[in-house]
Image 1 (spheres, rainbow, N blue to C red):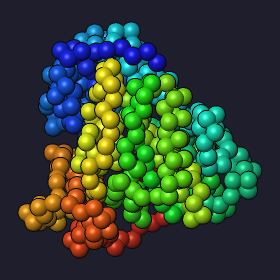
Image 2 (cartoon, rainbow, N blue to C red):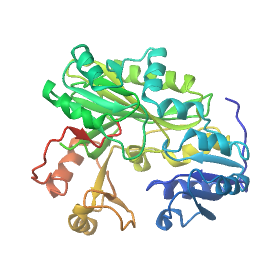
Image 3 (spheres, rainbow, N blue to C red):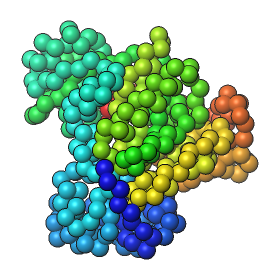
Image 4 (cartoon, one colour):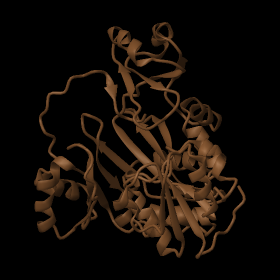
Length: 390
């Protein structure tokens, strides 16, 4: 991809923001850019630092034209934006992240074909369009298996098939179109490698280890995570292979499964900013937001250096009272809360960074002692569906 410089004083457009959008806007403003945000609903708590916010549907060509004409470049924060919208905006402004990578990660079949092409180990899968296809394919895939729509999108669900009797429930799950039936990888650990690429050079953040609860909600992110050297080198090789082939500029992450025997599988590719990569706000010399701006405006990437060991803890609304107590007590914790009145008790309230020791176990014990993240005992009916985007 060719590199086009966009200088301070220019206007950077950001389309579709979530809770991480405020930090991206702040990074762009700090770098000297004017910022215009386009979103399909008002989020004043997130967009208040922007110079202008345009609210409109993603198929409103009049407002999209207004947005595109007011920007020198347009970037997206998450891959939830329809690639056709960015193609339309490219008539009026540079789209430095490109569109090719977005089209690949939004289509699970294209993503897996891409990963196959660059010789990366992924879970076995087949495509299905009907319940009969599921019955015919399940023996080759095995139990448990995941049934997922080909197209990624907000609010989608995947379905886990643990036994043959579960397949009948897929009749309601499969509506129209093509689905992916994929083997569930029985794994012992999950990791993420986040990187920044400008289309030529790639800078990789330290490896992060993820911890989920029984309902597959993200609880914590630890960095830098320790794994065997050969495993880390293979993860880094995969990240560089993807960066060299994806035709993309900006922040991206690759999520990994590691099995009990040490076998490595790629779960998926994520473009744009992630909550997971917020762990680097305190553990490296540069965060994902600054690197995103640098990669997309034509600056050289900042060389990434680890600074300290840290834990990123995800705080949900039901933990509000408990975390307020720690806010008054902990001198080695840093906090970020979101002024978001929407959402239920399970929605994200903020993040906590726990640092101050080079020993990750010490940090984890400190968190455990507070009992803030002790899982509540709840009865949850197993309907076979997961809110995971994967």
